[in-house]
Length: 117
Length: 118
Image 1 (cartoon, each protein chain N blue to C red):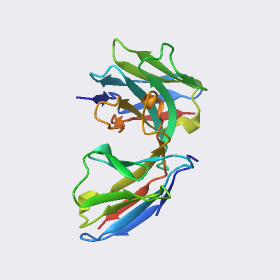
Image 2 (image 1 turned 180 degrees about the vertical axis):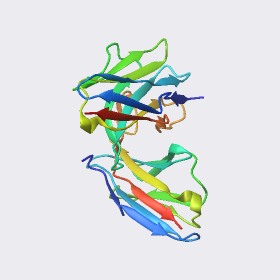
Image 3 (image 1 turned 60 degrees about the vertical axis):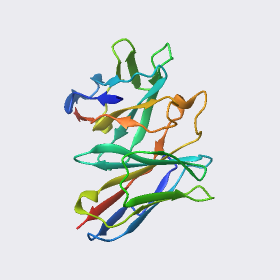
Image 4 (image 1 turned 90 degrees about the horizontal axis):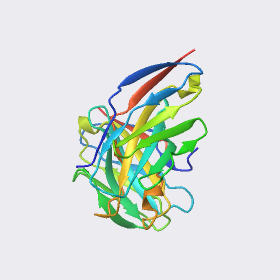
């Protein structure tokens, strides 16, 4: 069954340092997509970055990069040069292929990141 | 700002009541998804509509229903409310139904409606 696992309930990072948030996934599909979303204390869900299962290069978006290791089924989010505004909950999500016409996202339980000044 | 709007932002009601949550997708997006975020269940997919038609269902209770109108806005109806229905309800939208690049079809989320059932 499709599943997303985020094993770090909470993390601290010093401002201006890099941090890695872990995400592992389980799927039997060959075609799938992986997403990271940020949820600040205000509650909205903000799309950060996407990685396709057939993408050969790791995705990057500004200070965000996705360390995609397909054989290990991991899709870790790396935030470089952390800022105070990065303090938030981070969710890893997966979307599988068209097998059952279901386009839903499956979410992990999230990691709460706190950036220290 | 994702471009997805949801109203109301907050809703407080009593058990047994019925409420309607409204969502307007991003301009041009044909798909609308509803998700529920609660402390015990996390983020769960409820239902998806594409261009007015239901496309996929998740763990949506029979007391809940949704529809998508010709102008593509969507409503989620919650009836016979129970305390456990208290949650943050998100609407998300995306452009395409699917196809060759389905996995790149990013869902953009609205700000959510926080429902409190007393």
